[in-house]
Image (cartoon, rainbow over all chains, first blue to last red; front, side, top):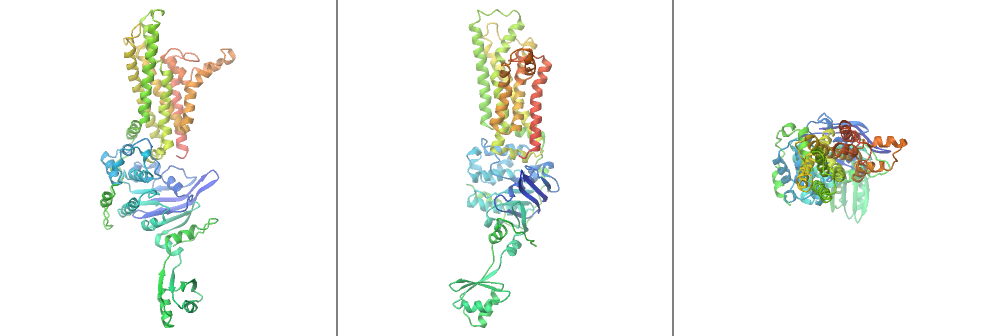
Length: 303
Length: 292
């Protein structure tokens, strides 16, 4: 469990993170979403003590990261794929990391196999592709079999199998009761992976709610209708609470009424329908609404 | 790519929630383990072996050159009057190369740290040992102990090779004060300089910058001092120069420094220990206060 309270980080004049508070609960995958420069990585670096907060605090299972007695077995961290000496082989990198905690050598071989690095384990990390570097970073995070996982853009540079593997892996880790905090700029991936979302913009929390709630709150449900007599349907359906937008070619988007209501309305007037499709927004729609305005981010209480 | 195996290693069912083992049953951080980790890191970089090989080649090579030079002028040189004098000559032949290998010692210590900063490895190091100080101490310990042992081995090698060439014979180890002690002092000196390099590495973080400062203090400063006239006005410069790491070190194991005045054993030792201690203290201060 990660608890951040009023985290603030200033780099000179630039406020990278402003008064950010959130909780990452065990047994769930919490997604960190936000445009570049929103403060995701800085927040993650503060969690693991690489950056010192200007003010505020963050704890992992009730303690600050720097006071953990066996950090690698409590928290697995992937901050970027480049936290590896380029001149050292993957296996030697992992050996040196494992040695700090007396983690047995067989665990090194295990994480190499789990992350699919076996064939390149003895090659120097400097020659790794981005995807291989990610796998090595994930392998290092797994060494201590930690209860908390903090992964910054873990699927960045991975091939489709790798992306799928990470998704299954973090879902599984959460199902075992681990707390997982994961950032990604791939919205579709986030929609498939996360249970709970924290959306950051300009260093502030814009939304902190279950994925489904965010999509529901920030997108409008509408019904797509196609009919040769679209104009008549539009006139019949429109009211104070129902808005109708004509898309041309007999297409209408109707907000504020359910598909059932529109179907019955059409039937009552004997108007033919060629299509009647309820549509819900996607995470992407919600995200763009939340972060779209570059000048001033909207904030809205999401229940 | 082996993707099938990891996928099948993860059960699909989310019903089962196995209890997680307590973290400390899977390992725990300790200083000794950090030393072991730093040892693995030190020995698994090619640059380490290149640098150490260079130390050996330069050291033994220069000793050999020096010994040959003495042998060729052998007839013109006054024969050593005492066993002690003969020993002193033989020892200087061995430790003479420290004029160059001291730079390699600083470089080995420095790049051990700056290499971590330039590659990003430092973030892995710090997340594994977030109190930061212990990993710095472990690194300084590994680098300097290795340098000490390795220097002794190289000196032994140089002693063996030069002994048959020198007109007055090799080092006679029956008199410890004039044989073993200066060799130990020279090895200690190189070890401490590598620790000095570690300290500068942590303070400056940038490889070329840290090397410039390290080489400047160890190699350039004692030469610069020679440009100050030996007058009363500049006496303090020469006095202070005696405490530069290389001058203090040379006082200990060669008898006379490049510049400044020869120091006695105690102040000499204190000087060569104080430099790396100060650099490491500075490194700790920077490491603790700055973001990684």
